[in-house]
View 1 (cartoon, rainbow, N blue to C red):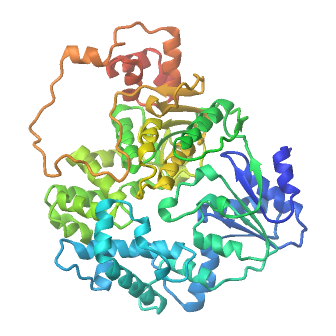
View 2: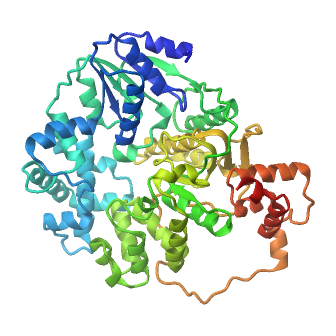
Length: 593
């Protein structure tokens, strides 16, 4: 293949460099060409972000005949040196909150569920320390990463106890009394100051590296190349840092995207400009030269599990022709929290059926109100989302999930799925022909409203910048077209044939880490909603307007791209029955399903 001028400059460079590469700019191809340009006897290490990226990279380097390139993750390097040499046993899922409370025999001084709240913070303190570049626990202040006022107040009260018990749990791991975690052996590897015997080290996805990973990389004597996208940093909640901004290497850019068109590039640049409302932002140039016209691989992308599940529920209940769907990361990963609690556990708690609850933490709660209080004191966003889902759908959840799972295909059948569902964190690095973005991302209006809070001591700038990054990542997953809610569009953005603005009547999904203020007790299910012809006509003002050729064309595009009937009807201001009738009239199901 013919390389661009930007790619050639990188391939021919010398010394330590960093590469800021926009989405779809061929950074893997560039790195492979860089490796090919080095002497055949050079020892080259390619550091991948995770196992799936590693496996894909191994395949690509082998196809190019680059036998001198070793592909690893930071964890795989650490595993061999730390776990095998010390005969540790790794606990792959980590310790659950109730397990930490039992292991350390935690005491809560009489406060309701304090032992579980303390255990939750111990787990988070360990993650904070293990991902840091610090040598000792006392070198960190855990309060720096606690943002919610209720949680912060709790941690302040118990700080010395939380800190001492965090040390104790780490000591138990170190001495082999209990299993160790993945975070632990990576930290121990970093503290051992390892010497990686390579001439070149190529560090991919640098924007999401932890300080511990970056410390290992920086200390090596090899020629170092770090590549990533400054605006794709979305793992701050895992204590990742934007390593591209932390290293003082000569900077190269890959600003031409082969994935999408200039229209999509323009939209992504406008979204990134929202950062100027909060900080000094230097506008960047993205050139889109993608020419894909296919509509085969269609995806629904959301910010949160809740937003995604709500949209999936709409699709499976509204679209009778939708037979095969796929969830990136598997459907079960969206119904379980990291700590092990399931959506069914929270539903059983809601119904007062504690005897059916499997998770010990949830079983100890007397009701959803207590669980909501626990969430406030621990800043547990996954449990918060589960509470929201249970409040929204109550006992409709089991049959709905059963229906979704019945349509879900396995990973080896992913290419047969009519529609793919994913949160942004799970589709990182993926690309699809057409995407439909769910209305649960931050908006420019909300960003502007934050201006007055910037100078407050508890304002978390990086968190809000990351929210903008999430929408940027969502927009740049497409190879062809985007269906995007009107609320998420930049003001005065020019119309584009590849960017379809959806006018939604559906309510906006709440941002993450919020607890619904409505009652968490069981509802009165006897109340019935009432409707009137006048109300239907008010909500569907276009219901009696004739369909034109232009409207039929627009309907065809939206149908082909997997937009559900509910959103199509809201977009056109027509009833769902009217939209279904037109779909049948145009024989869209027969032609495009």
